[in-house]
Image 1 (cartoon, rainbow, N blue to C red):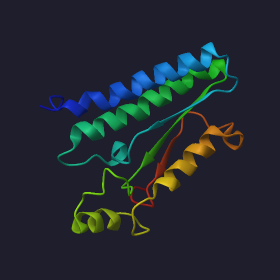
Image 2 (image 1 turned 90 degrees about the vertical axis):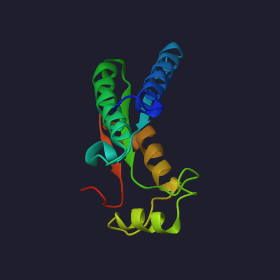
Image 3 (image 1 turned 120 degrees about the vertical axis):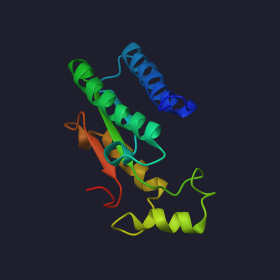
Image 4 (image 1 turned 30 degrees about the vertical axis):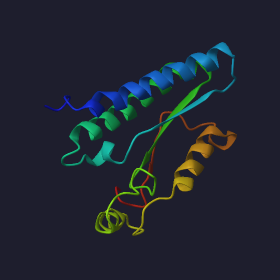
Length: 146
């Protein structure tokens, strides 16, 4: 069953709980121009066989973020989402060399993303140069999904 795996609902629940806590904290501290950035996955757009619940939770994260952007804009807060593809992280470190090569080949750039490349986009979204970016889902996938 689609929602019988522990992660299927937990991924979205974690995003919801974190977002609620962050928004409440920013509102309580009267943070001007608060920013919330959620993390989804390029699978939100493309889906994935054998990982349908995970992909669905990431699509839900995008929709949730866009809804928050509309709800919170009146308070001066911005909400955006990043959608990285295959990224070289501890989570993927145990993948076989064949799996790593296969996943890297899906990118037009022919390699996995580095964590700092994803972080740089998050930093941009939190900064003043993105002050008019709200409700966006930013793909960070090296051209894997266009």
